Image 1 (cartoon, helix red, strand yellow):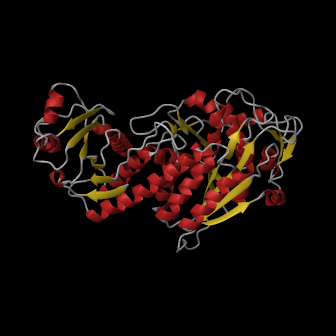
Image 2: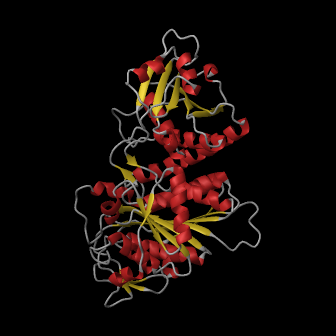
Image 3: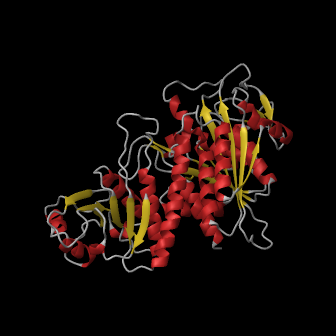
Length: 500
């Protein structure tokens, strides 16, 4: 898709369709909406007066502009964005996504999106382009019939009278972020047979080569040398060898005397059967997405390499399958992590925390001072927060607040859960230092309490995205399937850190 920025005016936009944001209960008797109404021959006022359209968030009204000589566009799509006081950057993304998905279904090839956001032009353009790219992703990669074949050839983001340079910069950034979110979604959507730990490592090498990241892939022999018994215990049941992916971005001119290193660590279980503690068969096919945390790290690093922030960033993705076999780790086994801490395995389906434990420790060995890990870690988080909020827990309240704020800015919601020391009592083992589950109570919290044991000396936060990484229903602005949550939040965190 070709993406452009424009300062208007809208009557000169050479596109097939215009998509215009409309606020709830807005009237067409003044300002920009009056102009659109006049140029469309009164269609906007007609729809509003007939109460066919009121501007509620997600509402749309579609018109053909027949016999109209005031606009080059032949179609008009009004998109409700809700109350003007609630119109945020995230709504701009959703508005653009709704425009793209709606008009693509009508075989429109070129679109001008007018988000009408009062924020800075660069940010508005970037957010609109992100939303458009995210909207274009569909999970039907392997379908051969009834496949979505319609394409958008050209997208124009319009912010009237804005600085042309700022607009173009926003378009460039939005394209990078949108494509990287979709890169993560594509990885998460791949069947386990096509996205093994080795495949993940190959994709990491590809993005490192293409965008200039340094890359290191630890094989099982090197993991043995590092003492990563926790990670390797998960891989025992599979014929596919585990991989530990290390990606690093280093700016051309690193900050002088900077000893801080931000690291993203993501769970990469490319298929999770539960191991010996076998999951029920129903919906097990979705466990191909259990590597979404690792895919999120890779997608974020892909974008970081192109956005080129002035600070170094480390990305770590431990990757393995979790399968049952005669070699698989058994409930009751005791394994030793890289830190020397011993772990009693109570449930082999609590494997994500086992691989993250060694990955966090290794990130610290590589110099990380701040670690944000992310994982589709617990079913309990879906019970607690549904598919609206991801959970955030950690040891550094400032970091947690930063994650919540960054998420709010990009339209991704994170809700903090407590991590009081009392929860750690639930993971005490009778025969080892700790055990990998703490019982039925507070499952998301005790999983984080387990990871806390390996984050000593770090500014650390944990994101449990199990309830939000996969959408069971399509939205007007996004297909069903992998959502790509947290990629944009991580990038916003990097951006905010770069400006300090």
